[in-house]
Amino acid sequence: PPTRLLQESVPATEAMSTRERFRRTLLLWPYLFPLFLVYWSEYAIQAGTWTAIAFDPSKVHLRADRDEAYRYLNFLYQWGVFVSRSSGLLLSANRFFLCLMPVLQCGMLCLFYLDAMLQFWSGWTLLAPAFATGLLGGAVYVNAFTLIDREVEPAYREFALTTASVAD
Image 1 (tube, rainbow, N blue to C red):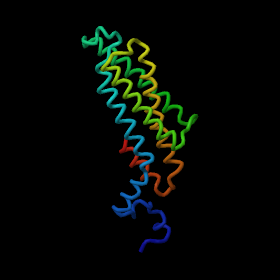
Image 2: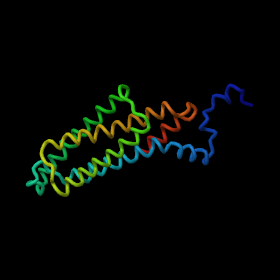
Image 3: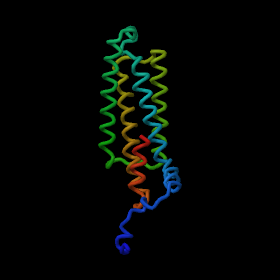
Image 4: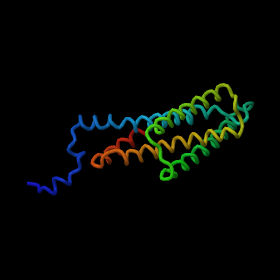
């Protein structure tokens, strides 16, 4: 028979039933939903709206001009992600801001969607909201995982972090 020491070293998650795993996953919604929503809206921005934007609206019908805008918008987006993920130890958000950031990201999706349809904003100044889009996405990522690390009880932390990685 196993000794008491060996029994205590078995992770709590190994003893969890499927129902308990499902229940614990549902309890993680304050972290999972912001991750899902921010990445869904980022995908819609990058794969959808940015493909229909050119810096010069009179050249939006030219693929090369749309491709150029797409490259620069994505480049600034990636820099925003890099900056915000790198600043996770300097700036930390609470749950309210973790939920607010994906809402703002959906606002960015609306902005870029309307711009792709109406071409009301053009030029290199579009790089600023692209950078902000990256800042929001990276901030949700780093803060969701930081909050899980801080708020989930240690016995279930690894389970929570693994589950959250699936949400994004």
